[in-house]
Length: 294
Image 1 (cartoon, rainbow, N blue to C red):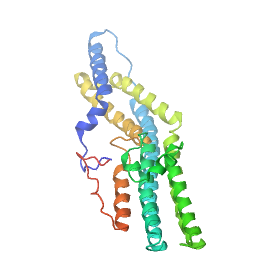
Image 2 (cartoon, helix red, strand yellow):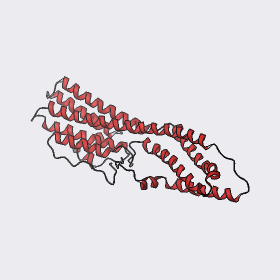
Image 3 (tube, helix red, strand yellow):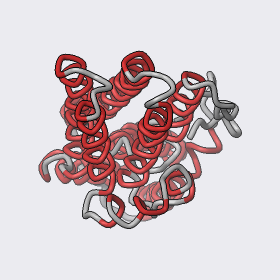
């Protein structure tokens, strides 16, 4: 996630410089043809075209931002649920009888959120997950098609084991299970966002219309702008292409790009809070790197 107060024009240009270069070459070709060819192209109602395109792009950008913001809300719910699970584990399980189980549940939750982060970003599960698990557990939960869900299921089994050992009663078990349900619901919402792209019409029509508008733009402006057409048309095309790219960037909030939800930083927040809740040393928070929080 970009956290700089002032956007980097270099970063923006690096993302759209290729189509912008093609557009500038086209603008120059149209301007040269206007003064060289004996016939003139008819004027185009660019105001009507531009207004209609702005509506398409605005609607698409709003839809993409809603997906991004929903992803952030779901991870906020995950942070709160993880804290609630840690607090219930610390307060309900007795010391010293259940000290080891208490620490295991808390560390498994840290492993769970990191495993979920890797799944959403389509990354392999690394040491930040396996290092928190016992050796006999690594080949069970992580071998499932959905490793994060496997870790969550095994946490539920350990809560049930605490109830069978008499360390918690059924009411306390129900309260902890309710937190696990909240965690599972948040995970389901994240997987829905990841696995369900925007409808094809939302992606194809604005893209096609933006490219068509940029092609027609110098034809409609050359009569009034003359030799300044390449500059004016390229600047206008830059604005429309930027809005189009914004919609593309926000569609997948878990794409592991500079525009996505900062999953690594939020997983580190959970890790710090949960480790401190059981008295273990915690790592430092994730800080932005060149204006980007991962």
